Image (cartoon, rainbow, N blue to C red; front, side, top):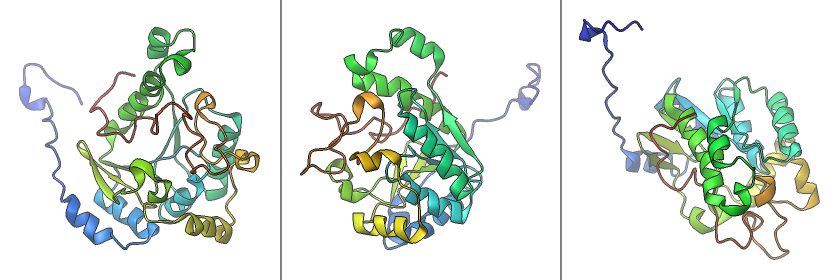
Length: 250
């Protein structure tokens, strides 16, 4: 839009902050199926809802429900440039298998990398800072045009996710967690029934797959996410640790 400095009326007003009744939505969706939650999320913000997917070990299930409801829904994939080549191949294979038509690969800001990680060693010196510039900031910038997003987190992962709500506030947006109530057997049943392909690294013993420096095989008696940031006291990359920044430099 052309903005005439002599005519302030041409300057668009900032959108007012949206007000949510999260408790009502949570109650409404408490016993809903994953597909019904996906549909509710899209109704909440038609044309302004996104899915965030790592294309990791369990990602196919949420993406399967999304594809059934609306295969054109934007799917945001954070390529930190530290991912396994198997994950990139899985992204491509799963996108084709499910018929997803708007998978957007989101990468870190080149200038941020040049300033803060010029030697590509930040992942070994400061994991939180690495996640910030490679995941949190890029996602915050990409979500600027959306009013809501969906994640594939589940309560059975334990830790901070054990009490995961189906709907939660994320600053001016809402975040929906359609798989929150699914158990591991139920998740595996969806894989089997829908004949969904598994991530290639699962056959090697990996159960939660992220960036190369921060992903290991869990111990035999460990939980599904024990292989992430093993021994570091870190359990999340940062995109789920509170409202994302309202804006970020790209």
